[in-house]
Image (tube, rainbow, N blue to C red):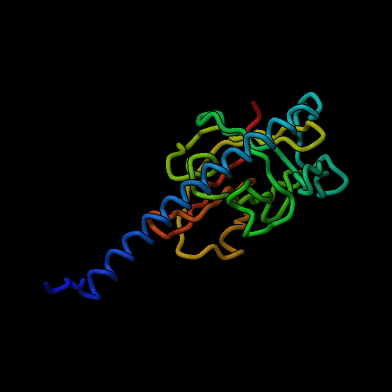
Length: 195
């Protein structure tokens, strides 16, 4: 009796399909772990955050935002997007490899209306960027409890996240992420709103 041999291409095809499925599962697990990390860290920050007061840009002697250290990571702010029920911690130092865990300050400060925050494009973080509406409220609270309110004025897209594009000086706050569906970058531009 002859033994049947699988053609090399069929074996390679099955291998590639299994590899693809494994990568999708690993990505989903990573997104879930990142969302859980954000929730736990936000809860820890909320426990120690002072009562909120209205922050006023330009009223601070220094543009450096104070940080709170949790498990070896410094956090500069809490980011709230009420329309999506999100409260996210914002790490202080830019680290591209840490974006899956929580949003991170890319540059600037809420104190001088130059804050730029990057995050990952998934539902536990910046997955809202392509769905947020103009006029939506975004709040940034520093580690002293000073809260700055913004409203979304536009949503930009670009092929590359160049610093000059991200740090658009015509807005007071920029939130950005890499859109995995289109491979473009999305930037949510916000202006100060006093509520």
